[in-house]
Length: 157
Image 1 (cartoon, rainbow, N blue to C red):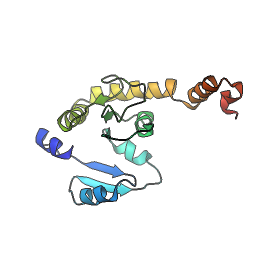
Image 2 (image 1 turned 30 degrees about the vertical axis):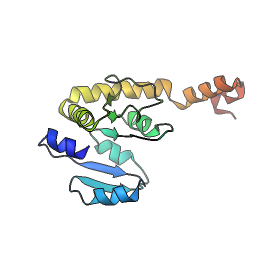
Image 3 (image 1 turned 90 degrees about the horizontal axis):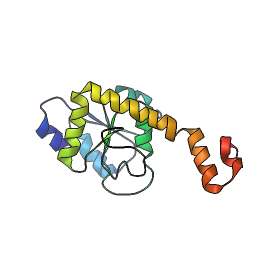
Image 4 (image 1 turned 45 degrees about the vertical axis):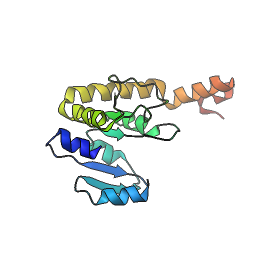
């Protein structure tokens, strides 16, 4: 993604990598002037507060995309691949922007950066989605419904 960003803009780009991740990739990225490698951090809140966009460039793997929901909950616009947003009831251009190749992904990131109105609208709709669809109460209700057990509702297990 970084080479595509470099091709598409002459603006300064800074990427913060957070988490354990593949140490070989992190070591490579640590040498790039645009990349800050943080590793594990106790709290992501300060990083989200400083972010223009949260990127989820997942190209392989499975599981729930908790980081997308986390960014939504922090009010940060998200750019992801389709795989990166898989399993989340979010729509392209409504809650987040999707890009599956480097050029599209980088272009989506720059769209968020260039258009504060777009960034704010995506973040607001995504935060509302988290509140209505992915709140603890909603998750409890979904589990109760899935298992047909009223004891699950209200967080009582």
